[in-house]
Image (cartoon, rainbow, N blue to C red):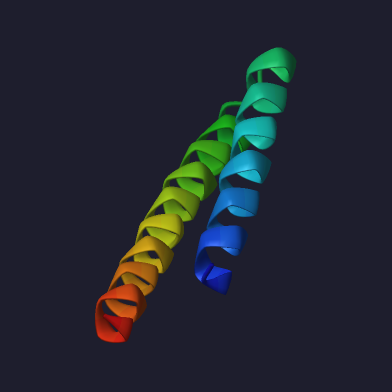
Length: 60
């Protein structure tokens, strides 16, 4: 498993927590930051998945 997938999943989780905290506290800036971090984590996870797929394809 590529490190980008692991870091991306962690970043997505962190963004979800930050977004939820922002909603609970009524802090729209924190909520927006959480959404952005969650989206960046999903992208990073996708990049890691592509790297894994390419690595697996080269092994075959």
